[in-house]
Length: 345
Image (cartoon, rainbow, N blue to C red; front, top):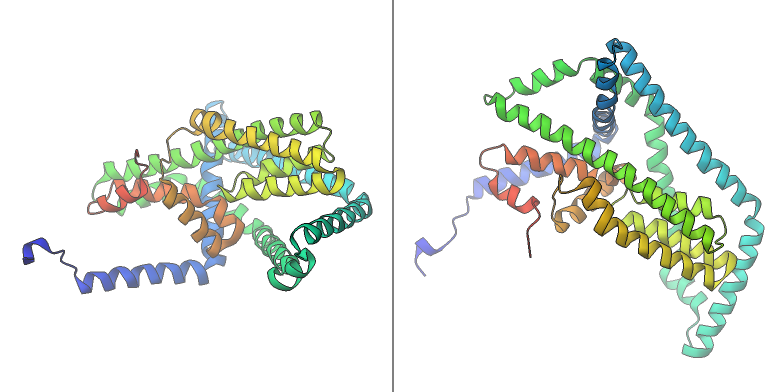
């Protein structure tokens, strides 16, 4: 085979790319307390920019438009928090009953499997899979991620206010970084559109899913229908994994509390809701704005959740979408654009 038929790899170039990726990973991992609040603030400020501009068109001064937008966002968050905590309180009151029924069903299931297959489920789960420890570890990781975000909520609020008040300055700064002003403008516009379309679209989809879940669970007389519907809908904000977690918890709780029929109803409702979400709601509401292929979507969610926990998984797709827009308007990045984009099979 002649040299003209071989691929030429520059060792220096490969080392530079490797060092750059390693540096970015180290900065994101060790600088999470600095970088993550900034990224979350940028996402929130971008989302609030739309209502802020609307209020300004109505004649509100800039400071009042920002204040009203922040107040409305705070009211929505507080209402959601109150609804969740009230439902958890209702479940806590019935926890002894849930625990008793769970123990009873677990014993029956263990005995049935042991008699049929000769496998002691309790032994396998306890000694080999360490299911309880893994579940506890997962719960702690989720709680830690959310508590870290809450502890930085004041800092995020300050960043959001500053981003909104000095929006023009930051936009001009970004444009001055590049010689091609038109390309810089398109990057800013495209990035803002992706964040707004995805996050607002995802919120609408979550509301639709909540309604479908709640009506389906009520019709099937599933216990704690409101909490299960809310829990499953909220977790759908995490791509792929969120639906499995939210739906899985709903199925398990319905089975433990009321038996197989309510659990089957939950499975049916969630399956129908997922079909509606994937083939109707997502194409209709979000469309192809992000247009990422499945590999990059899954890889990005896993990567950012490893770096920044649940919050990283939530903002993974908007960040990947922004990277795709950046690559589309940068010379020499055509191969990466091809890697990111969805392709017909």
